[in-house]
Amino acid sequence: QVHVVESGGGLVQPGGSLTLSCAASVDSSDYAMGWYRQSPGKQRDVVAIMSSGGTPVYTEAVQGRFTMSRDYAKNTAYLQMTSLQSEDTAVYYCKMRGPRGGTPREYWGQGTQVTVSS
Image (cartoon, rainbow, N blue to C red; front, top):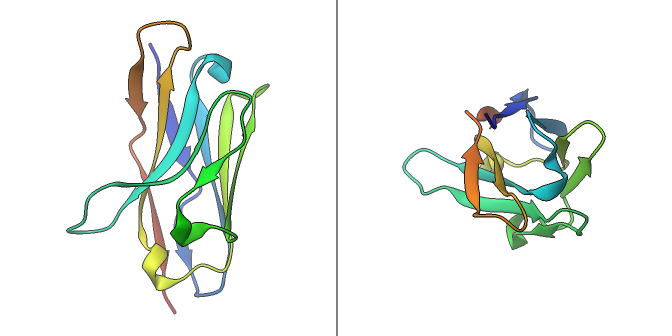
């Protein structure tokens, strides 16, 4: 059974930083992983995605402020967020897609709340 679990959300002041983690229950090396976010009343949008062994791709709104990385030994993806703004307030979700070479399926975590407020 494939599970992904996010952690690391919380309340942070504008201009602050936060790092999210996404832990997978299986070997993640055959999966693409991505971070998404959803604000109240809005659709869920992509933040950053990273294929296995690839380099991350970011949405323009977070380019230069957020950094996605993966630790394949720990089957974990990270999202380092800096210079946070109120517009970054959302529930952040992690998604795995794969496995590579097989019938692709998507697995979502339960989400972690990030609130940027003074």
